[in-house]
Image (cartoon, rainbow, N blue to C red; front, side, top):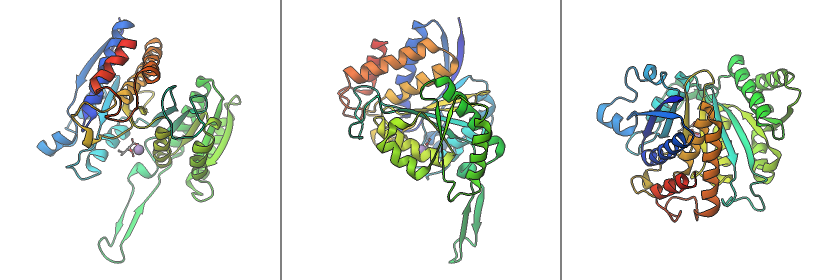
Length: 351
Ligand code: IPM
Ligand code: MN
């Protein structure tokens, strides 16, 4: 029997409740499709930091590299200054484990409400490939004359040919394997960011020449936002840099039904990848058993796909679709008509 070692990082806020339901469904899928998942839980997050002053302990990265995947809940604690946990845990894992792709599907399931008028599951089905290790997130820059009236703050966007190229290759390949419209849209800002997106655009067409079956399309990020609302059906796969990817995937999440369902994968094709619901730790709902666990379950299904468990992936996704179409009243926390654990049970039952 195939066996996979999975590191579970429940994290903060509603993270633990979400992850609990995700793991429940993953275990059920493993049983049904005869493979084995060995979970080990790590307590990284706000509570641990407040108790120990340590964000990620010595050796954490070395240990996590031993796992085939990481299943993450959420990072962010109301008593910790913004940035400390996000940079010290989430971004550090993405960077040090070289998870250079952030893969975020935007798919509206039947029965789920979208705020877009006259759009349904037929129209809303695309994937964003976000570069996940560079750009404005690289952390270069600094202050000059900090705290004086002449203060200068510089935050640079770092774009390496290697980093851009590996992201683009992944996107072209992904678009080919997805086998839908076979159209890859580069989302940039070539009219203003004339260095960064010049590099992106040149690499896009050079690499694109190796993928003659994939149509190449380009949109400035502001226009892409507009079209995601007006004509989401025009998109198949969108590839973009880290910052633009962050922004457009929140827009994507809301058109697919919101944070109750949106999931993503931080992928290193040759290393340890990490799967997470993309909504944050939602502290106001924490511990109440009312948060919607579907986003975590969808992250679990992406993890199964990454591990190569195709049948189990499809089965979990179908189970989520059934629950969306048949049971759940709303995807919002507290309005589902079910508790967090009941919603998880419903998915297990339909599985
Ligand atoms: C996301 C989040 C993170 C990001 C934050 C929490 C650092 O918004 O995963 O999209 O900006 O990447
Ligand atoms: Mn974000």
